[in-house]
Image (cartoon, rainbow, N blue to C red; front, side, top):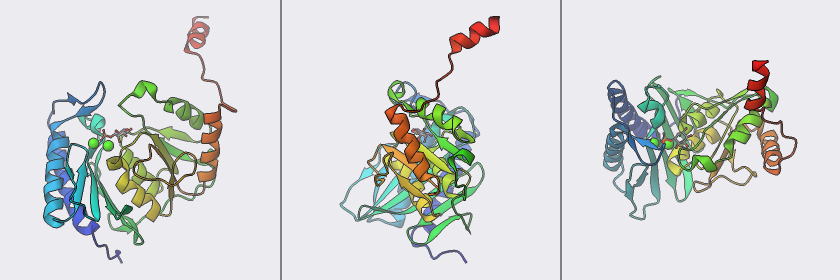
Length: 280
Ligand code: IPD
Ligand code: CA
Ligand code: CA
């Protein structure tokens, strides 16, 4: 029997409507605008946020909302929604069908509910604190992979100040120490993939609250864990997210500490050497 959810029933309907709107724009060629050199935004991001926020306000007039595209209502409510109206904008703008709508709810400073809807696959992920997580109404659980060496991982790279981000080092080392690392381009879907056991772990630097709020509830409710890179508690303002099925968390943390300390690293092969050798 489906859990007796308090918020995500209505929130899922709202996310589904947002997803349908995204698919309408996806079918056309939308114009790309820039928030930074590689930070894209489209009319679909804005229209989706407008729709989601209108619906959230209608459903819960006393709840506050923070949306990526500029919505901020702060009435001092105990409840606040974190809304990413289109997570995966770069994919969306280039016609690559990996994106979603993500809405997470915080109550008195604690994450309590999350909805992530992938309209390209018609997949609805929902979770509420203490009530479990589901995908299209069926319970989901994190994977049972117990070794990093047998795991598949996800990560992402920020579009803002990307030249200052060291993640390529982590990507390289962890690629060599696992079955591989995917960079699909939607952090919310990456977290939903950990919750549903498709990924064994995921990490990223510098995500925002709207990217993570819903996915963190999903991972926790599916039996997983989310911390920062030093095993500190995850909170929405932390710039580090490390999520896993719990079983490989310690190994991941150990690897992060080693990489930060520059110990035991495999060297990045040189492209210059490679090219020289090819030339004979
Ligand atoms: C981005 C995606 C991407 C992640 C970036 C985010 P957006 O969100 O989640 O996977 O690597 O850090 O900014 O801009 O498409 O909403
Ligand atoms: Ca996002
Ligand atoms: Ca977004």
